[in-house]
Image (tube, rainbow, N blue to C red; front, top):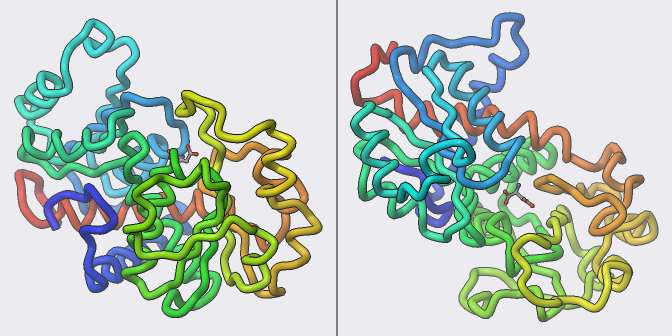
Length: 308
Ligand code: ASP
């Protein structure tokens, strides 16, 4: 594995290796000194063209816990706002000797393009509506921690699938890991390409809930909507929101996930989000371990660092 661009590129063995490595590295988070020398001398650039708090901070924490040097490059206040192209920025990073570049961009495919221009490892931290592979890995890790396995589990992914890079990455990875995914959304919030995805589709949340081991709620991505995809927010939550009544219809062992940021009262009610069967806070903590694993596996092998 040279880059992490798509969750679909990972084989079962590779995905399992990331999860197992994350599990080992997670122990560092429990120590008083949260630091390993593993990536000393390596430089990781966080190249964020789109707003993000948790993902950028998570990658930064992950890199720093392994002693890498971290450069945060946010598009605002940089030459990007003066019109510099992604390619020119890439060439600058290349000249500075970045060993790894973590990129978030509003254009689908941006991470793939970047990988053609730089020698370092590229990690896709979200490209438009396309993919967000480390989110899928941390979700898979969280499920495995809670349920003990992934193989054979029934996972419902609910909400704005059309604009969600989280959904696509999760469908691809969970399928590789042996879980059965059902997407639940109104027809207007499903992408046309969904027919080719390895999952089933339902428009009826109430029907799917009792048969689910994991229910993953997605944020309604208003910033990517250029038209009206549902009548009103109230109508959306009435049919696709996870409130206390719906939560009660889930099997007792089933868990609720959300990648964040969540809109309480829209796709999920506060009582469900804060329930002990919600993994939302764990997902954030697990994100650091999984990103440590990804950076470790991509950067520790070769390159210019001391790599001990
Ligand atoms: N944080 C996730 C993403 O970047 C999910 C979201 O924004 O709703 O795609």
